[in-house]
Length: 418
Image (cartoon, rainbow, N blue to C red):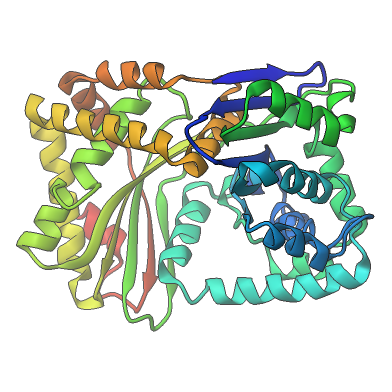
């Protein structure tokens, strides 16, 4: 891995793999819904969409046609704390694709007719998002856990905001957030570090030569234990029970990943074996850690028929109590560590996911970590560290979310009943 940081703060990170004939490339900017407020909630996601709608040199159709002409795959996504634009191409068409990617990232025109067309698409996306109980439950969970904070706002934003966003709103937000020091360009595949830097210098000169301005800071937000629900006649209901964790890069992160592995990730995990295999209460049950720049959550999630809600929540609470009381064994710990090592090593073989990891680590931490460093951090996990973390984390009162048909009892009352 090689990384160059220009005086402007723009970062280029490269993972060379000459055994491949392809390259993944992405541009990630530290701008997501966590950096928004009630007045502009949804602007990060809006910009992600409309950046594909035409530049000074290319129409919206030209952009997609140029990627398609060389057989490249391309996409973009918006998260709580960052937005990413990326493609994967064969090595011989890398420069063509990088030219298009930089053009849409830097030179989008935001013509009113294109904005008006795309806002209809986004409004439809907001409507469709309510048809997915899993996604709805996640939105309810964040709104509950970070009530009053920007982390609690939905990435898609509100219909009212999306209906009025214009070019001035976009340019004001980009001026504050789309700055070189808040931008990472990553390459993974058959490209050298020198060649990658030259491409960035050629196609992003305004970011390379810009004066340094610091990225916007993100303040730690208060976790709020509480209950939220979204009642609709879904076929299946979703449950999320979430505990406060810590920021990305924390020294306890690998111990948290180990808890995720042995407690709720995969078919051999404690929760799956108890709730799905032995009791037949759920279609799926899993744990979901999320670690951001300032905050983190550890969630237990389940997909369940409404008639099984109460016994499923009882069983989840019971498994948490057993984990806290009895802890994990050395054998379980070693199994979890092996799973984490394998996932880390396999992840490097997937250039797209590895490229995303490189960018995310740089955006959230401002550092790189080699595979050897990541493996060493996993190896440092012990059963004692896992047990201490489980006791501390699960001693805190949870935020609980529910999406589905009206349950026999509010699940927070079930979870906390004596």
